[in-house]
Length: 558
Picture 1 (cartoon, rainbow, N blue to C red):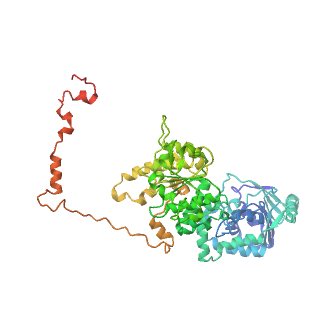
Picture 2: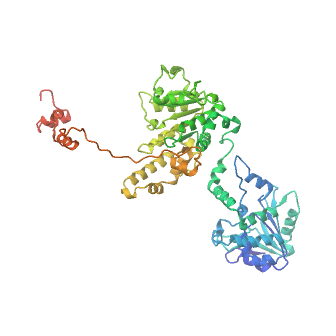
Picture 3: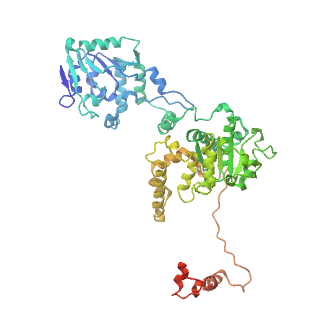
């Protein structure tokens, strides 16, 4: 028996010396790399045949079905050739960077057609890896890769394996391999599957397929998280409602995305620009949840109540009367009241904790998470009585201006979605810090950006300065489109052109046509000359006594 450590002796070189024209090679490993083929190409092309067993169920029918389960998707992208290290492992990046992958894959595919059979271990039992050339066996091997052959670095400081020579020493390993190889109950032939995966590497793909592959690469993580649980349920019939059919394409996209976010994170902020129909979009979301027998509350400023009560009443002015909306409408100020009636609802009878969905119009009115010990503020009552108590409540917030002058405004609104406990949201995200930390860092970046010279204070600059965590958080729970975005990414032929905003005009009209009246500048100068002493009584106090009035230490006789 001889030992090989890939330091003083290299497995790849030893295999080259053993493989002869017509040799039979047997191999059991979890990984097969086309770059390992390239390293031994001259010798491998001369052998008689190679039998390869994947020790794990790679490329088997069970593995493929599990990894390519079709879900609620329009396009289906089959798995690429990266399974089982086929197109290179993490330690073969240098080889992949040479951009010779297509040529190597083409040669490897032809070699496989001529001389190789692949079978995959589907027994569910473990199998020891090995390599054998005729009556010489190597045990154990970490895989058929350039790093395992000793030609590239690996994650092992040492990799000692034994070389057994002759039918006596290697015979038992060879007989075990042959016994497993000939057991159809434990192995599945995957030669054609492996070959088709390699063929993908050098195939001439159509532009359409390249486009879909790019989309799959960009959105693969998002698609992996999709499930029927968070997608709108078509069986509710929400697509047949009057409000849904009244929506434009960009509003329908927003409505379905909102439902996905509500089901995943329990909250969403719709921050589309003014005029893009946030109310109609929200109505479509409300109708979806009403179709699922959910109870819905709309909270809005008192002056906007009619915008919402129009659609849940049996009025001739209701364009969606056929949908029979049944949501409740209350004003923001009603959160501070415990008695009386508002918009036809008795406030002392409202079961605040029984709403499955709360839609907050003009949600920026709740940007201040003010708390008081002697009384419940509106924010406290909304958080405690509506969101935390009773049933699990989802929160949809509508605001064209969710941020006033600090990112805390946005954080306070988001807290309503995750009930003030950020673990309810962060468990769905891979943030490097807490949600509070994300907003503190974003505010610090904004403060730094705002101090830059005007020519450097650009949107591109602040986007480059903000951390990736901030964008991940916003992508998860917000939807914000401008008119320019809609015009760029949607077919707006049904919408028509948005109104063109004219530049402001500076009109300077005289105060009056009477020439005896002084002009604005003269009036301003005269006002500036006035001391207005009657409004500044402290000017009449002696300087020596002034401190008594400023500190409040003087008595009435002073």
